[in-house]
Every structure is written in structure tokens, then in C-alpha cells.
Length: 270
Image 1 (cartoon, rainbow, N blue to C red):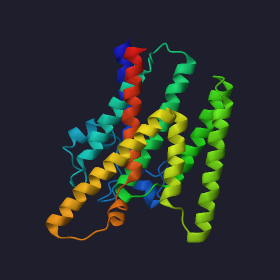
Image 2 (image 1 turned 60 degrees about the vertical axis):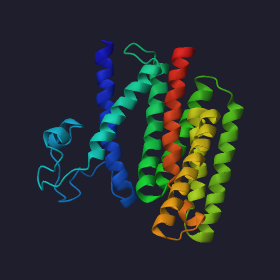
Image 3 (image 1 turned 90 degrees about the vertical axis):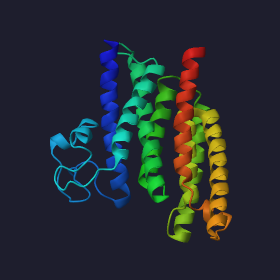
């Protein structure tokens, strides 16, 4: 029964993975991600039911579009598999089973909602070096619901979440000011909102370590880029190189990895 339960979790995770690839492609283009039928980005042909099964459709179609025979990037298959595996991994180490309590299920649902937020942030930032404001609004909304749940249902320390709420308000005010001044939201404002959301769902310890590992990754990236520039005799300043780094991607990726590692540690040690 447990095996069947985790197979279902994997299938659900792979379906989410399929949705993530769609959302990462459409959200920056301001295309509908709910009602518009899936289509091939090369020939624009609407995809049928047999084209939309996560993992299996890619394998059976040989990694090509059924209609125009254009190759489908392997990352779609990889993300669907990784998403399914991640959903199972987190469910297992959270102790989720078919007879879990409603509170354990609610906790897992919140984790899934948070993962959706982080993965969309990572995907869009990696592709466009941009943190989409609508994704951040989604993160803010689920944070509010989660904080209310923790305070009302689990009787968590309300003062901690009041502080987070105040920080959210201050960042949004700062973002409004920069929006009026520069006619656009800044990357820094979006990163700050992301960090607060990370703190709400994964805590200060994991978020702080995610920041540290992100800074290390940035330092290594800049060093390698400088070496490459020297070899190619290209001239780029540290600021120019830094502006090319997708900070949101690194923060989100390290946050997920650390969150899973902490879950595993708690499972085996505590």
C-alpha cells in the first residue's frame, strides 16, 4: 500500500513538473497558464492527450513533436523526473503516508505550494535573469495563508510572523517608491521578497545558509568568468559579470537542496 501511495505521489510530482515547464515558458511572455491549451512552441499545433503524459509521452514520441518532428529539449523530461522524485523524497522524509493526519497532509500541501513558487522563480530567473512579479505575488499570498495557518491551527509564535509581515510591507513600500522613480520594479526588491518567503517556509537557518552558498557560487562564477575573459581577451567589469548572474536561481536551488538535507537529517537523527 505504501509503495502504491508513493507511486501516486511520483505521478502527481511529474504532472507538476510538466506544469512548471509550461509556466516558466509562458509567464514571462504573459500568456495564460490555466485555460490556453498546450501547444508546440515550434509549429503552434495544439497537443493532444497522448502528447501530454509526463515522461511517457517524451519517451514514446522519441523526444520529438508528433506534428512537426522538431526535437523537444531533454530538460522537459529531466524536470518531470526530478519533480516526481522530489515530491516522493519530501513526502517520505516528512513521514507522509496514506493514513496520515489532516495536519500532516496540510503541511505537505504547503510545501508543494512553496516548491512551485521556488521552482518557477528558478526557471524564469535562469532563462531571463528576472524574478517575475506575479510569481512573487503568488509567493506572498501563500506566505500569508501559511502564517495564518501556523498561528491559528498550530498555535505558533505570532510575534515572529508579525515581524515577517512588517518586513513584507517595508519591502513593498520600497518597491513602490522605486517603481515610481524608475518606472519598474528592481531586481533587488524581488530578491528581498523572495528571501522573506524563504524564511517563512524554511526558516532563518536554511535561508542564511542558502545566501552563503549563493555568494560562494557567485564568487566562483566571477572567478571562472575572469579567467575565461583573460584567455579570450575580453574586458568585462565585476559589476557587468555580477549583473549576468541569476541570483534568484542560485538562491532557490540551494534553498531546496538544504531543505531536503535538513529533512533527511531530522528523519535519521531526531
